Image 1: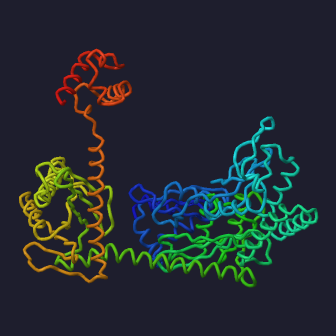
Image 2 (image 1 turned 90 degrees about the horizontal axis):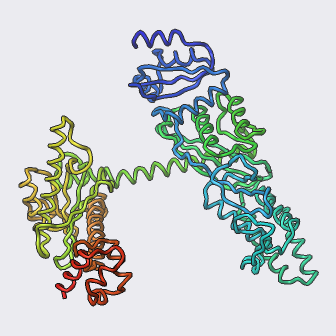
Image 3 (image 1 turned 180 degrees about the vertical axis):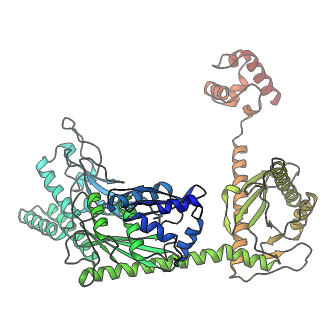
Length: 618
């Protein structure tokens, strides 16, 4: 440590605040402390630290502090600074989207139900949050199947009368737009919606059953049948809520699983005593942190990101400062919030279930990551070993030729980096020097052009005193994949050597998925279940798809080519004006120069040029 850093540590105040660790002028960590002096000093003592903390300490070159009036103020400031700087060593919630709500603007006459992406400070009533827009739409569909609140959006004007739509004819809407109901009748129907969204299924069910019985007594059999269907739908929905408890409050249950590298938080959302959803959140590089630290950081980011705290929040482990976090949640909610870590009873059982979900989500994520690695980096390693390379290829380029009986011949170049497609690096070529269907010569041309472009980019960067580029043509491949057998491979290799390069390449024949190497007559057959074979098949198929797509677009353009496009002085606007005036090419050819010059936008020289060109072709 330099003298300036030692002096800063010596002069640290004993008060709450945030500290900002830096490396090379970049913020690498933000933390909060009740006592800044004790907390910051602890980083620079010789006592052992966790590996992640030690790695961060080794990089610290400087730090700043911001003093606060209270621990709550420091907690909020820490969260804001993490969002601002996105430090590498802080726990960060990757999924920072806002969760949707159901919104009802009951300040308007005859309000409708809408999906809201965030909770604004307006007059609308909000219900949620829900785990995603799909779940919101499912709830809204259930509401419309159970009640007769209108499904259309927009304001209903008192002085405007509309014809009722099919929803009214089906008995699914009261049609307030057509004055088929009073505001009292509509509000009564709306109260069912509020009860439903608050989880009061039993009360709503009894009310609908009473209405059904009354309608049957009054011999309104069609209405009774419609109510019967709604009662059945509601009962079906209640049966699906098999997680219903005797607990009636709204609550979130937050559990955590760690594996030493990463952490996975799982939030179970309960409203009105019913579990309405749950979702996992990955916290990278938080696997070795203490549970209270990870949970506190997650809670701050989760509720700041758009999720409104419910009346009660359950956490897996007591936090270091439960009172401060609880006060933060109260401020976010604008009302009472209880933050507890249950130790027994039904709430503890809920927490154990949430923890199992967190462990399962972490296990599946790691398994998926392992599969992805086997199919990408692992496949590159196996491919390199199969064809005798010293190290796994990082950048693999695949080439294919496409034409129709020798016309509109094109080539594609696709790029895979570490076994994954890098689509921004894809390139396509029009074959210029080859006439007819000669895939061998076409492959020779495209390899020559690709390497020439690469050499030019490298030379240009070298002249500017810069290293070779890491993207584009200047980023030379570690391996070429040529779609074809020994002949095409030979033409590609010849082009490479003429360009002054010696890069490993192989051909892939489609019949038996054989790998051909230059100078070897016998082919290599990979195991049918090998990730390396799946990788080269993906590259080959992607090159074929990219070439075919380009070729089809050129064919489409050629088929719609107009004779007028080849005539000098006749641009797009003039072509349009001429076709509007004469409708067909035949009528255009029958016109004289004066008629052509009379079209809007045409001049006498342009008309003469057009007339001469048309009649020359004729």
